[in-house]
Every structure is written in structure tokens, then in C-alpha cells.
Length: 393
Image 1 (cartoon, rainbow, N blue to C red):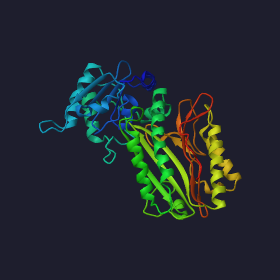
Image 2: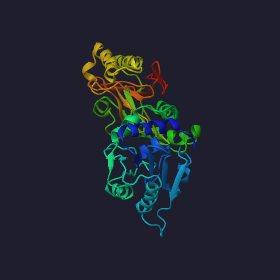
Image 3: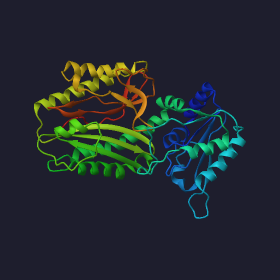
Image 4: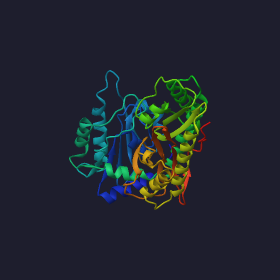
């Protein structure tokens, strides 16, 4: 068990400010936040009282994952043996005991009622999320005063603790294994899907065991060719069977999760000889990203960081081709809502926020060009987590 006392202190302070007596969460990303533990099958719960120590309830078969928890009081239950009751039945019994032990029955309990974008459990292809049956279990255990604490969770997740930043840094370092594989795999005659598979293989095999990582996985979306980059360079389609041709520009949109902490990176690579126009556009995006990174420091408006990148691309003649935001939060999920670097976004950067910087341009003659890195807002400016070559060749 590794302690993260700062996270517990912050959450309990937020509960006090919101007038809540406890917080009960079941979503995998919030279990990572509150317990440092990435669940496997999604039948767990964590109870964080406003005062006193938290309690984690989880299936006993998840012993390997539970070794990572930051919580001392862990109560386990068996599931899915032939003579076991349904998981929520046993979970309900344990939660009623916790409610009685901590005097939480009938109190104001915060729950995660409004999350729609979700991070998965370790079973990535079978996401799980609590719904009405879960709420019924919580009502039976704690009473009717269940309060939506989604905003509290989003706000407190926005600023990471030093412990969490180190875990995210590890995820980024694992993601770099994938970027290295991408650079090596881009070659004439290769298919986009082959390149993506090589990247995902590198993350899974080199990531497991790296800096103590138990479980690393990636989703690599690889796009090549002007038309496909222009249409899908945002990452809105799977990698295809398109074969790389001389002069192609290739993009990878790479999301990586390492023990429940996320990285989100994008790189470009040239297959053969790309045109001078493409090189010029690429250098404009590099310049825009560098300007946005330089603008990062505590107290700066989210919109101002977006403007730093947007102004460069406008001056270089690509303003209309920059059609999306400049960045977003990352860490407990692939895309987190805080901070959000957008022209109309309201908010300021705070020390400890982890975010992407990802200006991009799209359209005829360009295809799609984007560079994305993950950074931490340090006390005096940006701390780059993803130092990996941004060269086209």
C-alpha cells in the first residue's frame, strides 16, 4: 500500500465545503482517484466519510489489483462461485455495516450520479457502470439523502496530487514505448492497422513490469493519406487496411492506460518524401504547440492558452483549418473536462493540473496534422511529461 494522504485531505475538505457527510463511489476512474485501485470486474465501492478513514469494498478475487490500493481498511467478498449470492447482495450487506459503524445512515451522501463519459475497468472490452440497481443498494444502506456529487468529483480531480502526477508520468512513459514502435513501423507497403497493432503490442509487452506497472493497454488509431487524415484525423474511425504510399503523412492518436492512469499523445510521421507544403504546415503546428506550452502557468485563463496556439496558426494562414480546441484534462480518464482549452472556456490553470496541448489543422492539401503532448502545470510554468521526438522523419 502506498499512501496518498493529500488526496484524502482534499476530498474530505471538499465534502465539508459541500455539506456532505460522506462520498460513495463505484466508477472505476473514481476508485482510482479515491483508492488508488483499478478494479477488474467493476463490483467494488469506496466510502469516504467527511471525518475518519475511508473503506474499500471489493471482490476477493481481485487481490492482485488490491495490492495497489492507498486504503488500509479493505473488506472483500466472494463472487461468482456457484453458491455465492449476487454481488450486489453481498455488497449491500457490507455497505449497511459500514453505514452503521460510521454513523452514516440517513446522512447526506454524495454519489456519482451524472457521469456519462466513463473510463473502463481492466476488462476494457466490457465496460461497467453503476445504474439503478446500484442506487437501490446505496439507498438501502445509507438512506434517501443521496446527493449528486459529480461536480465535486470533477473539480477535485482537476488538480492532481504529486503521487498521482508520478503515476500519470509512468503512463506517459509507457505510451512512449508505443510512439517508438510507431516511428519504427511506418514504412512503405505497411497497412495502417499493422502499424496500430505494433504500437499496441509494444505498450502491452514493454509496459507490463515497467516501474512496477501491472497492467498496460493502448488504443492506437493510425491514419494515412490526405483524404482519410482530413476526415478522420480527430480519431473518429478505426485504423484501416490502407497501404502506405510514397508521400503519405501518417498520424497516430494514442491513448494508453497503466494501472488506471491515462496518457493521450499524437505524433506524425512521413512515409517517403512529403511535399514542401506539408512540411511548412507541420512546422506551423509545431510552432503553435510550443507557443501554447509557453503560455502555461498557474493563474492563466484556459482560453488564453488556446489563443496562444490559435494566434500562431492564424498568422501562418491556417486559422480556419484549426477547427477544434487546443487541449483538455487527462489522467483519470483519456479525456477529462478540467481544464478545457477552448476560446469560450471559463476557468484558469492551477498548479497540479495535467492536460494535453494538441493544436491541429485539417483540410485539402493538408490532410490532417496534429501534435499532442501531456504536461503538468508547475509552480512557474509547464512541465513536459512526454518528451519524445516530434520530427516527421
